[in-house]
Image (cartoon, rainbow, N blue to C red; front, side, top):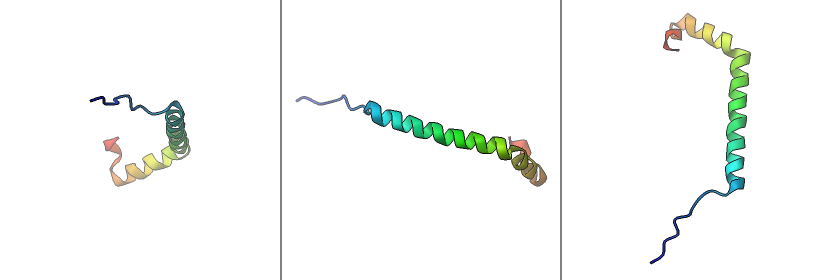
Length: 52
């Protein structure tokens, strides 16, 4: 019995997933740069900043 074990993602799908992950990471990093100080101050006021 022959079993096809070569089930990998096509290069196009892999490139699209990688690009989507890069865009999400870019937006998260941009949001942290824009609002990081406000986030940290809000955490410090509630006493949660020591977790980070």
